[in-house]
Length: 161
Image 1 (tube, rainbow, N blue to C red):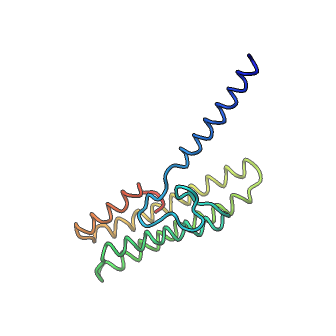
Image 2 (cartoon, rainbow, N blue to C red):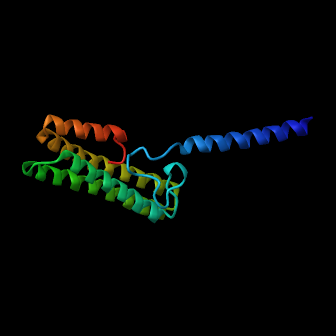
């Protein structure tokens, strides 16, 4: 009887972990027009080498930025503010790649924590620059353009910008 209980417990645990992993992966493609491309796994999850995933993330972020620019239909007067915003976006993304590469080189736990703190401080500074650039752009937009920007950011939940 005890052997049956152990086997049942093991099988139940394995099944629960399998279902939990499927639930965690969740449905992908929450950004219209993206997902299902080469290297995407079931539900839009990315697979492949870290460099390949990084490139795919960059491509998707660049595509979202281009889509936003297209939807905003910016005037000539708004272009300088857009350029500042776009530059801040790209600077924010470049920090993340450097973080990944440096973190892989860290060997000890204290080194990893020190690097994570440093990365967080850099990201905060970069995010403050990005927020200011977004605010400067936003103040120059028409009400219709603001609605477009609000909608696009709401669709992504503010992530990966």
